[in-house]
Image (cartoon, rainbow, N blue to C red; front, side, top):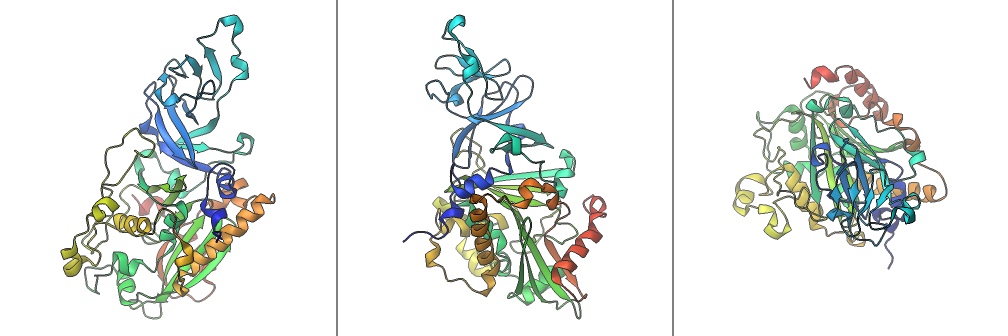
Length: 427
């Protein structure tokens, strides 16, 4: 039986979803990972084995790891004098992928002008390296996420590898009904919980509104607020093409953040979090803190940003704590999410699923992605691929309102009221 979601889970070269993703800028690495004339770094992106390096002048190159001479890996190359030289025969390439020297060939016989390795367009902004893996002539502006406009000193970047397909990782962040169980399952109404989390704990079964929008999909989980008479507590989130998520992990006022689940290959993805520095503070609420416990990076293809907690050690689950205190027995929100999405398998067998009304955002997002990919193969590009300004002033987050009316309109009005206050809110 063929997988009905094949067109949206596969992202390698030539696949429909992979080609769509190549129309957008991709967060590839932290600027601090690459030093001038230092050894190259291996990257896996969209099923391609790449190397990244910084040349003598500070320019970043991201290119196919194979030397186009005899296909030896440029990972073993020498980064020197504004380029990288293959150790096999001494052919050298600049950051744009141009061959600039063929050291094993007499000068009169060289044909450097005819050799070019596959190299991608790169841009650095505020400590993050972005790569565009599509047609350079169609590269749009970088996405204008609010958090990306902050100076580098005000931004926290989080990279964490996840051993599963990109789509099930995205769906984990689209699924808000799990918050009251996976992360707050042991919590009870008390003075220790802030007002918003009181609302989650009192009513763990919200209802949903979902809408397709020009940049992806928006949903709002809503329930009557037990703390604001006549109020409705909303948790609003966005999926933004091609792999971005704005989940409601903080109040709408503070939630100036965005996350990506960038496919490395079909079985691995990289969580990339871009957050205002210190915008979520650790506290004593059960499970309500973020912690990335990472191994030191190694040089292999899957050696970057790997969590210590993994399937091999059962994510360090503490069964005694699970019985007595924390519901999961697993420390930190991120590790809890990592556990459940990886436990589904590298690519989940969705034929085994039984979706429920609480999964409406996931079901609608899958259908929207299938339709978008089909339209793309027929020549229609997603609107935000050509017009990144559609991503301006978008936030996920939670809030309570007593105002009646259309939920999307109310959400936009709440965001507009807060945009001008952003600098004060995160100071």
